Length: 289
Image (cartoon, rainbow, N blue to C red):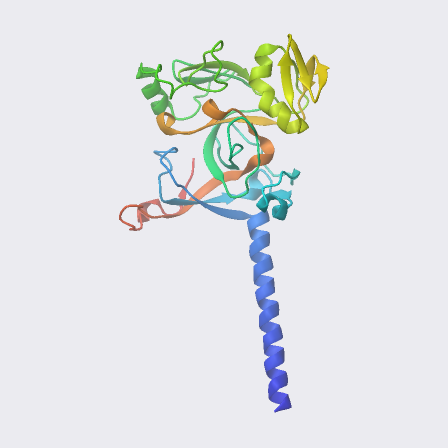
């Protein structure tokens, strides 16, 4: 009897150890290698559609390390990135934590809220939208989904409010058809804090400094202290959906901090029609471009 109980005890220990190893391996894979995400909307059509399940290969731009438990409590936490083997490029499709889970006036981290968009502008770029088309100074390569931009160019209904864009300023008057120019800051870049730059970069500065930025009597005031300019601590990106008429992206909420980027979308590993619940076999293992 004792021998039998000993075998059961040893078996239980072995199974428990195996389960712990499997959980550890799964967690390590999620952090350092692969993560799966489901496409919930049509904002990236035609390339990605509702019901696609995609894989992100994290080593491409480098996996992130941060306090997961603090993030689960909706606390802001430092995010560190292990260097990857490639840099982010224009037209890359990226998965990221949406930087405005509560409102568009403040950048915050939410571990469970993800977006997927195409990278249009990199740190150091000066980006504008002219007659619906994305333009970056010094870049001749087409950016984003040009068919969608043609549709926006043909649209004249830009006075009803839904097409007004970041930074929602009546003096600038930007919309998704005519936008910018907007400089996309990188780490170490400096700006003069005049009234226009205050409007454009207020959220970024408040996020970096975790303090209030105000503009009074032609003077910028950060945490109660007047400042003339600001040097950025982080890199930022401009993101846009391929379905430009139906995508909440940087045109509406502004620039994306690099820390919030999970990784580059790699392949569609599964696709299920959300209406019929049938597998779309022709989309399985399709590489994402």
